[in-house]
Image (cartoon, rainbow, N blue to C red; front, side, top):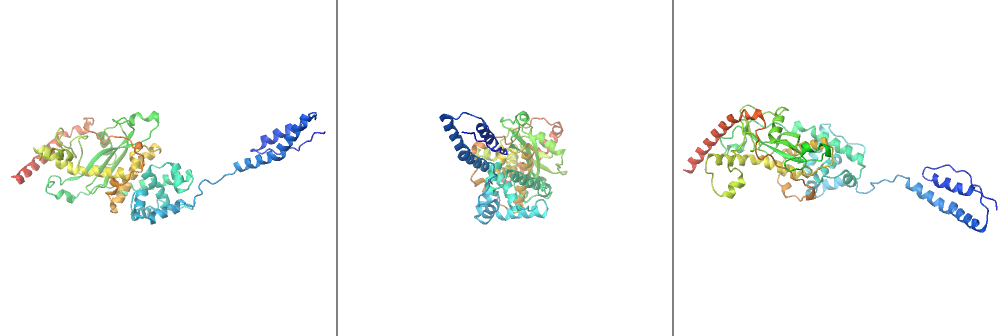
Length: 425
């Protein structure tokens, strides 16, 4: 029986190997005994029945199939959240619906963001805020908003950049007029020149292994040390981010003073024991009970001018602790090691402070974050220091002012004690 010859076929990248292999088998001349004949029939079956099936399957596998095909598009999901129960917007975007819309309008008004062909500003902002609320990965954001990874990444970066550009608009120096709280009898007139409080707060970070050591804090976790100052309206008035977790609070404050942080003449901030006591930064007496909780546990009145001063100081400085607590509860990404590049992680900490002030200015609820359900796995939360426990005399410029600071503090504390004693007489 003559051997059948097959015409040469064009090699297809997905099927060429099979075509060439079969052609080689059929063109080889083999004597046709019964065994070879059965083999020939098997080969014919493979060529005419099996091969076409493989070619079809191979061609199907090479076709691009859309991945995000859900009917619940990102735009529809955002609309559903904004028009649904009021808790939905707080849960997913960390603010009330009206404040969300005000933020979108502000970004449009400042020409910082604009609608694209596929995504409106509302959805762009939602992508960013959802990531802040959940520490959501790019893959999670793709699934939730039904967009490609590149689209998610691009719009996240655009919103982050837009919000950080609002820093100078919403993080402003404090008013030099005495705050009404300072008119209360326990604070007046001793703190009339106080314009706010300062503290260092650690924000967990993800750093390449070879760069981690400077960012290792005293709890041996990886973080940045962020200096924040706030007023008595629970608004941030200065943010200095990006310092390594191993840096002392005083060192970060010194750097902030050389990069735009200014204290008007005759005014001062309240600080904790991690800072030097100077005329501009009034610290509590060291070695003396001063925390509000400690006074409560002792169940006794202050015994001398130092304890009284520390109690009043703690009552006012509690504003910075409240502000930081609200910030981190509202934006849980600050409590976990996020997966963004280092500079983006630094920008995120600043952006969250800008958003906090925006929410505060629009009378957002400052209490609900503390009662909200934590949607991030607690195992992801990184244990970081809350600030330095003591000042280590590591900043010479502050050391020169400590005597003047001690004299100022003694003067205030002794006047305060005299008034307190007279009222109790």
